[in-house]
Image (cartoon, rainbow, N blue to C red; front, side, top):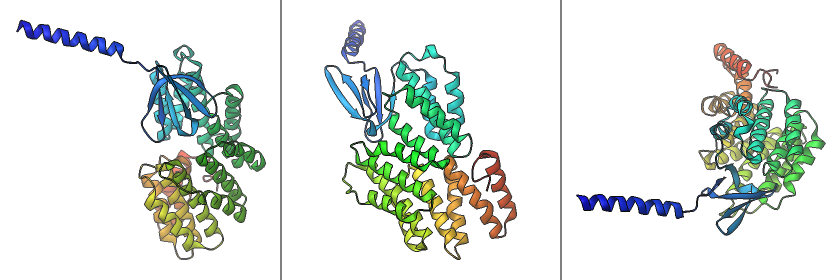
Length: 348
């Protein structure tokens, strides 16, 4: 028994020594695809983040980064990141406002809080739950004060979306152009898609189609998962163009292929796909029930995707009446008014 106690104590002591010898990385780089990368973040720019692992330093391109988890960051910051992904923008804003400055030990933590607050306000505004100009001003202020942040490309894209929403298309193109100037195919694709959507907003269908086809012409390799996602998004844009010019069936086939091939976890892409499908069916004569089913998919399965959900509810409000179900139409109208009172869809 005594020997066992000695052996156990020696074993625990050895573990303690080994634990002390193992590197204790301060930060964690979460990626869109692949395992997180541990290390000490030593610098960042709008294009890359440099992380040190012992004597080795790695440069991680910003287009691969989903988030950065900081050493000793407050639990509220972790919660903000999780809720932002879940679409709970009100929580993000309220929690960001409550974090004490003294709890943010690094300027990068403060940058994250400011960016996530601005992004949440922008997404709320784009879904009709806030003021577009106020959200734009907040994001512009973030860009002005944090010119070295790894969030700047996403900030530019978001600013572009806000500018499109208020009809400032030329200014939006300048913001989207910042993505096009990067060296990465997926970012260039995002820029083209965004510009294509801006053309759609103006009903410039040939110009929009040209942008979407530009994305679809990019060769896909095995390691370009993000490019593939952008290509699927471009297919949805192309389908919208086709339906708007009377090519309903071709557009519907494109959307159905996206739904069949998209990652089941890509809720935002699926929500957009079903909204696009519903819109195509609404334009195709005799397809009221098919349109209804498409928009119902969004209401039932993807209600956390605020922008898509608001559009789906607006369509359901009309479609339920068309199929003789005024009670269901009233339910859709009430939910639209309750959740998205400031949405363009609630005001139509």
